[in-house]
Length: 346
Image (cartoon, rainbow, N blue to C red; front, side, top):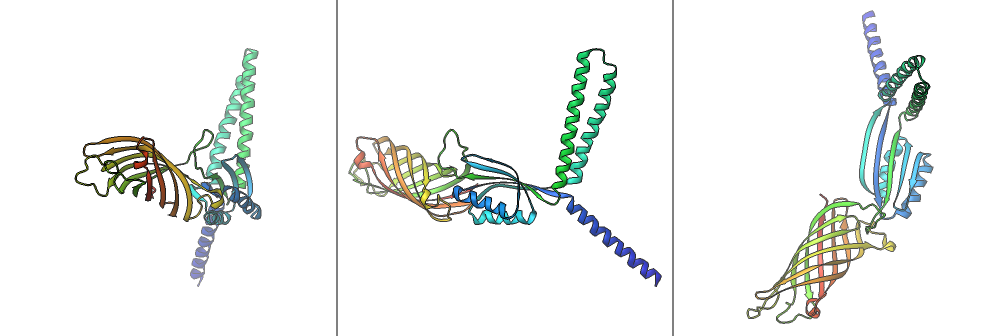
């Protein structure tokens, strides 16, 4: 009977010790996290974000703000941090980077204590050197070194006190950014890597024998490289039908262009996943080729379109543009272009 009781007490002691260790280990850690996110509804989301912090009594350790972004350093509970990440999705904020690292307070304290020990040893050695210093300038230099080391020790001791306040929390650096549409000298351009394909139909306004066909099928590679969106296209238009006896008509039109699209402030700034209306432009070079003819032309093309669907990984949109070449035969080479494009994040 005594043996059974002894075994019971041993098991109970082990379980209690394990639980205490696990609790101590949990309490001696914190999460170091950072988030970068952008939103097309920057003016609306900023006060909502501040309201969330106030309602949850989140401590703001640091805050910086300009027109394009707001940066916060926060001390937040882990359950509040999880709730905040859900809220960012609900507020239609697009996360660019997210990182979470577990930090062990005891390890960081030991690292700082080792630094303090080294500084104290250095102070002791410096004081001994001060006793044998032969010149006034040498004594002033050593005194200055002692003062600097004491100031560093006070900073490290303050860091240790701060570590105790981080216990069981999340130290979060979060940046809320305004979605950018056009580059300028003062803003930070947010680059993306979104190659894709565009199919289009080009219909000259006044097709003419010896110049242009009734319509052309277009096959383009489309590469988006900034948020908002900026892109380049490269590809060719192929005439639908060329009369056999017409050797002058342009059968192929090769295209290289740069374009940008803009969202309306009054229609959500492209924040929805479906049916975002936008306007934009293309400017580029068209090279026309026929059996015995060729021609080059710079053109500009105003556009209006609808993003049918988009998320963090893909974009599917359609648009209508009007191609305006700068040439003497403008009337026979200008016209409407209808396009659909699909792009993916790589």
